[in-house]
Length: 180
Image 1 (cartoon, helix red, strand yellow):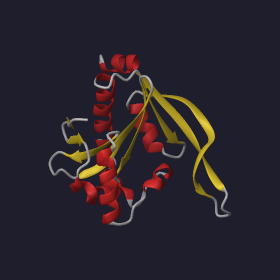
Image 2: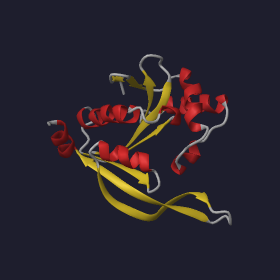
Image 3: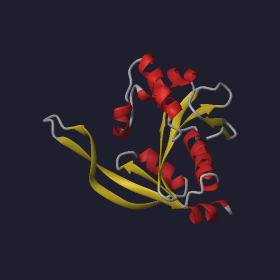
Image 4: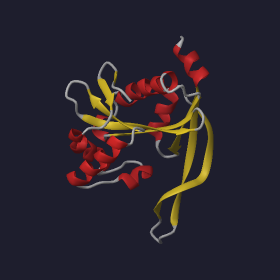
């Protein structure tokens, strides 16, 4: 994916200099689905950046002024034209509209450049911020999967299953939303 720019952000492939910024948001994942990505050292962040550099489904979200990495967006293609999407952002940059700004550009890229017909996102039922972002992006809530997946365990060691919403957006819905 080539560089995307918004008014305040650059969305680009990961590079070696991104390790410190990545460490800031992956040292303490705020949502259970990112627990497998948890890292605690700069060395682990550098190794994760190397993996992200090779995996073109992940892109870095950076402040245009400083180049500071503040999060990431990702997509996973399902044949023939559907993509699962998601995001992970540094809590220090919440409430400034960066997630929406970058996600809007990312959705445009997926619909126009990648020729996506349908995008969807899974969001845990307690992740209110991501639910609100999905809705601001024009995505509709398609359903709630009860005890859908487990990322953590209860104190007794048994799996703690997450209730998960699915949000989706068709290209024709996106086009209608953006023609206004």
